[in-house]
Length: 470
Image (cartoon, rainbow, N blue to C red; front, side):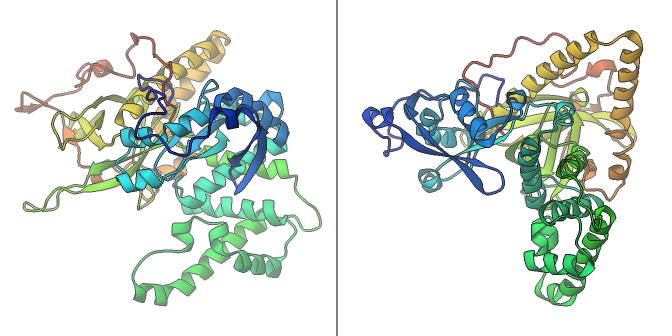
């Protein structure tokens, strides 16, 4: 990810781990066909000369022309190299062809994949949302083509469960998808027929539409559960349907994206890792749970990869962090997150260990986001008068308490998938000399780490040739 000291490995075509299908320089000087994938199972077909040295910036102009994206929206999207094993957001100066040659090195460095999986893995070039694009700017976009690209990506993340959300959210989003694809003029029978033809999984998250459980529970409850889901989806569609007239697509697209903005991890870059499961008994061995770690300009979110709910969500002013390298063979790379908690009513600092070969990337990305957010907030504050600044400060204080203002209140209830589940985490309470729990002090002075999000004395972030990861 952009930020940190993580660099791409040296570009050496003689290295044994490089791909053997690298074309000759003579071939690369001629026009080559390139597929740039966009969300929604479609692609842009380009003919590129000098493929071996073409940069992301140069490709960007061609893709924007093909998709009719205005220059005013050129910062909305970025190029990504993606595979099931790794996702990397590229910078304007990066050269995708050269990075593809280094893909195996990147997989060895930042994944736990086997040699066989690494040897068979191939990245594809994608054109997706820029992790560093502000949500506030996204709300100002009126171009339908740009909005549809953002919608398709958000919809894919909702359906795949990458963006966990509650029933009232995924039902409403499913109804908006139905309206966008089929129009808002369907009557009850037409709506039911369309849903059954395209299947619920086209509108609702896969883990909801397909469900889980044993054979007996499936046989007994599947029919009634699907009927209930279909009914709820139709009811939400009825609320936005307008028989005899068609709602403006941009209005529906804005409504879909606005609903997604209520999810704090919308637009995050995602990393893969594991955390310790809580030990249930004295003799039980410690096992690990797969998690997705989402990081954006607002904070860090640790999500259960299987259960599709948030385990821990922290704004940057609520955490300290660091990462550590393996000290001995068999040890893991670790991202450490420290946050406020309590034990038997006593305030303590809690530590969560995230095992991941991407720990270095995550740490660098957090630092870069803190720096970028600080610079953005500072620039915005400079343009406001005293009264406006006071209003913003009050809003931020309220946001720390309720997450995202009034709209977040519904998500904060105990059963919400967006609520943190700190009680279910296997954390370490920070102990002073192994004897007593160390109480927190103002401004996190009791932090176990020297690196803190609230510290005003950051050194400049080195971004030269660093990775951008999502």
